Image (cartoon, rainbow, N blue to C red):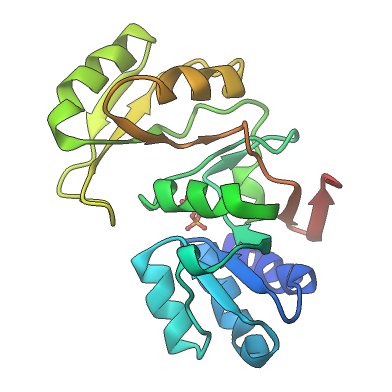
Length: 220
Ligand code: 5RP
């Protein structure tokens, strides 16, 4: 299977994890988009979906799926989303599409995170993909200096504004030996909204595309 075929295969495989009659959390990105399209025939069998971005909300609506406000929802059994990098312990880097803050919020509410990714996303250690960090614009230079002190090389994502009106620093060169510890450390820099490390709340299940089919990792 090609990379695109792998994305389509994991998107279809995720349908088996959708809880009928319940609210579904839906992530952002090209793999999540394929999942939304595959979900369309099931629109009447779920209560609705909470979207992790305005783009995802629009795509859900186009596919006839009711988009719900997270504040009106008290239980999300399952959240389905992609990743930029994922390890065998199911820690991830996310935010390549810039939706990391809402993704982390919906993932935090969900009881189960099902990650869907093509095989290129599986890595032995996180960090080759530049780590996205969403920042309050007035704190950008301060946060950048703090990230340099941690050994990274931050670069402003030019011309990009998040759904929350903030900016993103993409940080190259970090050695991420302990993703959960680094997530906590970056989180406490004043001006950071969200760091794209998803380790403290990683995935529970990974549906990974391979040339031969879909591999399942994790059993949480
Ligand atoms: C968006 C994300 C995406 O999940 C991540 O970028 C993966 O995208 P794709 O499925 O297009 O490879 O975190 O903020």
